[in-house]
View 1 (spheres, rainbow, N blue to C red):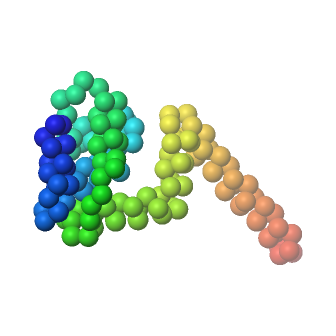
View 2: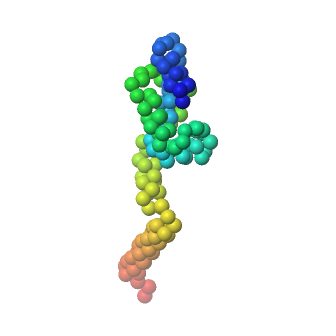
Amino acid sequence: MPTLRNLIAFEQCFPDTNNEVTFFADFMDALIDTPRDVKVLQDAGILKIGLSNPEEVTHLFNQLCSHVYYDNSGSYLLEVYNRVNCYCDSRWHRYRAVLAHDYFRNPWTIISVVAAVILLVLTFLQTFYGMFSYYNPRT
């Protein structure tokens, strides 16, 4: 990690260089907020860190680009960064994440939610057919 810090310092000292390393560190800071994020990135093979625990990696990336100013207009990661932000800002994806996090944590909650939806649909159908047979009797 000292190499990454030195490259960021180099880009800050020389304004004629592009800010690819700084933007990469800022992109990783945007992705990593908790030690669980580090674990997901390590399991996917995206992040290979020799530090002892994910808390250190989280703290390192969250502090790495503080007080660093740069221009990200020509970065190769800008499109990915914008697409990730667009995905995360979508209400549908946020609601789906809350649903998965709160209600689908273990198999019993999944079974109970599915059972509740089935009961709701069956209740609706019973009400519909009850009203339908009342207004259209077969005589």
